[in-house]
Each structure stands twice: as C-alpha cells, then as structure tokens.
Image 1 (tube, one colour):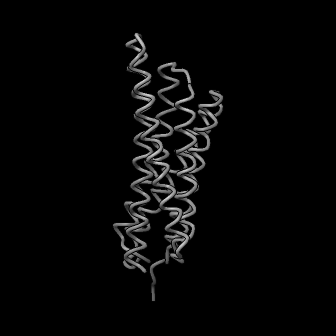
Image 2 (tube, helix red, strand yellow):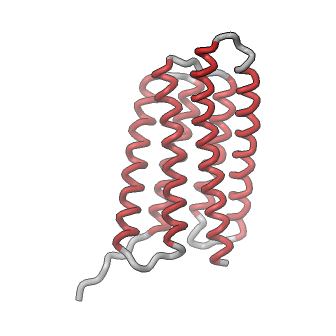
Image 3 (spheres, rainbow, N blue to C red):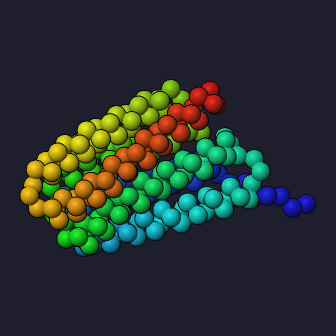
Length: 199
C-alpha cells in the first residue's frame, strides 16, 4: 500500500521563521555598517527563504491532513517570507540609490529584528501552544507599533530637507521597513488566531 509522506509543518514554519530572523539580523548589521558582502549575504539568505516557502507550499499541496488550518499555515508562511523580502528590498535600494544609512534606519531595523525574534519564539512553541506563546505575540506587535512611530518620525525629519531627490529615495526605503513591520504584525495576528482556534 502507498502512503503519503507525512510533512512536519511545525518544523517547516520554524525553519522559515529562523531564516527571516537571520535576514533581519543581516539588515541590522548592514544599516550599521553598509558593506557589499553583507548585502550579498542577505540576498542569498532571502533566496534560501524563498526555497523554504516553496517546499512548504509543495507539502501543503501534497497532504490532506494538516496539524492546524491549512489557510493559516499558508498565510503565516507568506508573512514570514514577506518580512525578509522587504528587508532585502531595503538593502537593494540603498545600494541602487546610493542612499546613506542613518539613525532612523538603525532604530527601525533593530526593532524589526527584535520583533522577528519574538515571532520565531512564538512559532517555536506552536506545536505545544502554551501560555508563553501569547507573550511573544504581544511583544512582536509592540515592536511593530514602535516601528510605525519611528517611521513617522523619520518621515517628519526627512520632509524638512530641501533635497527632493533624497526625499524620494529615503521615503521608499523607509516604506520597505514599514511594510516589513506590517508583515510581522500580520504574522503575530495569524499566530494569535491559531492559538485561539486550537486551545
């Protein structure tokens, strides 16, 4: 008799979360010390993250029974992947636009990395769904709120400069970080939904 291979979706999601966290760590390092090797390492990490998502989607398509809602697995995977995608886009455009780093970028990147660490910690306890998972979800959402505050502060200062070209460049870069934060917040919301549905 032929059986479907059993896929470990908990591990797959955790692998994705860890890869996204690694990407955001590299983003932090880059904005503190813009260097081409860091940009290349982030780009490679983003490609690895894409492959992890591809594997997970393939597994979803091959199995009938999942440990929790199939749509939640898909959406959480997408949010995790989007986080590192936006981190990579930030660095790509900093290089392309020859945009300098600044304290706003450093603060936003640090908050993103902190949020990603809490997302990873929450995903790591997903198979047990203990009370501690909710604490990480709350902390991740607080990081997103902090980034939105930093984003508005960065824009307010940016619009004081007379250099219109710099305004356009930096606004796009700040927006990528804000979008990454939105995806982190989305991941936290999905994790919260999973927790509610399964406890």
